[in-house]
Amino acid sequence: MKNVFALLAVFIFLGSKTPLPPKTVSLQEAVNQKLIKLDVHGNTNSPHYSQPIKLTVKNLSNSPFMLNIPNGQRFLTLDHEVQDMLVVKSEQLALAPGIEKSILLNAMCTQKENRGPGENEPYRLGPLAESHLLQVSNKIQELEAYNTIGQYSVWSISNDVGLESIAGFNDTEAEKLQQFVAKITGKNIPEKDTTDYLTNYNRPSLSIRTLGGTFEYGLVKTSAITIGLFNDQNIIVRELLNKPKTPRGDHKLNFEFDMAAYSEPVYFVRLIIDGEIKISTKVEI
Image 1 (cartoon, rainbow, N blue to C red):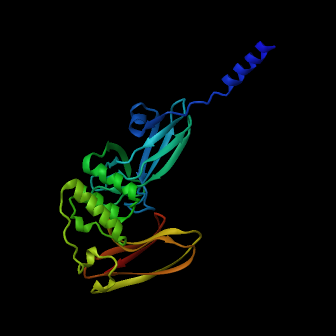
Image 2: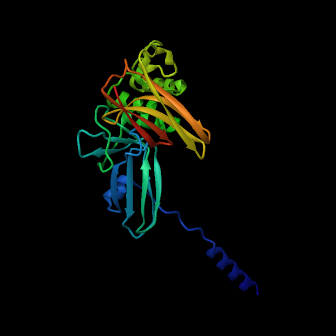
Image 3: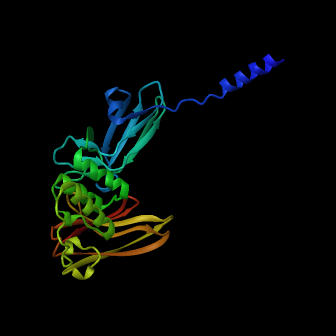
């Protein structure tokens, strides 16, 4: 009888063995090993500093795995006049055999003077960012600075934009990124010019010739609201409003900008809710 109980205990022990989790494969490894079919295109429903590209992958292998899209992954366009992109938030996708999934990636432009991508703008997989660009990209994810402050931090490395341009409605976040970029690059932070409209976001009194309007909308949940001023190349030039925790309900928000500082002939004022462009209004000066 003792032998029977011993045998039963062995069977129970062997039957409770925990299965191994699926392996994790980086996006570059999956492409190199031909484990996936990869398609990447621009996403015009989101500004270039939020979720500008849509990635679609299909598992071509016979095994499940976790696909890792690392922070710092670069995506390059085929059109040299369109912005290349840098992933600023790592993502993981669980892929069963034969399964196809799509995801919008938090990414930012690395070419300030190029135009934003169109809906059908194709992208190809590029190399991982290195050195200061990767450090800034990781810092943006740490601070969750998926806004113009984060974008100008990227441009401070990729386009050598001055540190005074790292500015926005969240002064604390702007100062943190200014200090971080200064530390890793050895650049000096210029003394803040409190009379400069271009780098002061919380002093509407600095405006000389004001043009503005109103957006009315309803929210079903607490959401991040941005009103952005874009030029005709689909590039953000200024946030006109940033309210990251706007409560549910009906809202009426005013915006304005200084025509003396932003004097291009055409702009677009866009209402962005949780990273998605909901309303776009053309403004001709």
